[in-house]
Length: 188
Image (cartoon, rainbow, N blue to C red):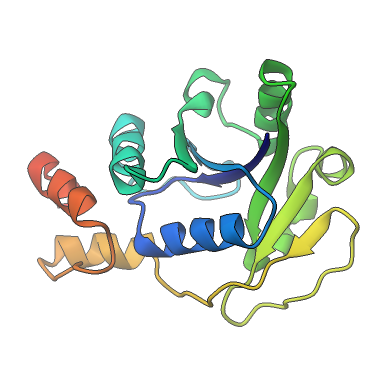
């Protein structure tokens, strides 16, 4: 099977994540999309992250009923910080029958050369790029494929701030995720 890996903190997962995943799935030859919940991105400053198990549960709730989507906690059991190449290598060893691709926003392409062993990623894995507002849409490399997708500017930071301020996040996150956040008193 061909699996697209969508790495993220998903703090929380929102409709932008889901639209991008669905679009990349629909416009490629993927069989499934796995949402890989990352405990901590090594290139990002430590932020107010909800507990990783809460973020995993929110992903599970958000994708419930979509049999092409799967939540993954693979990085929970790996050394930290987690590096993409290590996760890709681990998954490729655990699931040799699968072919893995990586989802990447066009805003992260300029950061790719800062990633651990990025040359190996480009050599062994396909990268499916989705456009981000204000970012270039064409990158020339045989392993990189730009997928036409809606330009979305929805951020988890905006959602967390809205929750802290008691503002509505309706239509920004799935209702099941909103209920979970409210019940667990996350981001307050």
